[in-house]
Amino acid sequence: MIRVFRPIPVECLKLLVFDLDGTLIDSAQDLCNSVNAALGEFGLGVLPEPAIAGFVGNGAPLLMRRSLALASNILPGEVNEDLFSKAYAFFLQYYREHKLDFTYAYEGVLEALKALHEIHDAPGGRSRTMAVLTNKPVRPARGICEGLGLAGYFIHIYGGDSFPQKKPDPFGLRSLMDETGATPDQTVMIGDSRVDVETARNAGAWALGCTFGFGPQNLMQTPPDVLVDSAAEWTRALNPA
Image (cartoon, one colour):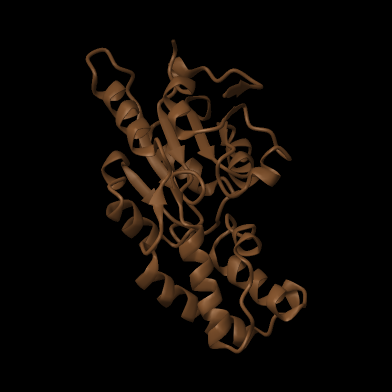
């Protein structure tokens, strides 16, 4: 189902920017396995997958810090910095080696990206560019997109370490606008959590929310302009009838 709260002028869109985790891909199992491997390495108990998945979206450092805090029954600010540094390094190395063990593209994602790409290439089609902006470190983000056959649809795949600030800071989204010559009114951010909606708002762009990802519990805290329940609905939501 497509729900419209504020109509996006889809005929004017030039830049479509996608979040990665919880939007294009379901990476929960590999992320949770990597976090729990790091916790186990340092003598801490494993956490349930829903608890870890709830921390996804604000970048890998905060994911690891919050997981350490929960496993230790303390506040994130109370986590020992030496422990955090070692656990985070272990997590990154483990995740780089296991990032595609269970991760997959959501149903309808490849078909939707192909359809949006074909509309762009068709005679008289609207000139549009697609990119990825995620808070995941850029190396595994690119590796996953390449491994799942997504990379070819995007002009850029940027991660949480590609810019000085992560989402919801608008730096990355504005950088993509500058690179592609798109204005905020010609740009839409597609994501599964309030982080993505706030990124769009902070950059003056449009926001399309996805209810099937990791962040549906907080997505409506900052309502997007349009809400969809599946990737298959992207094509219809982002193109005039």
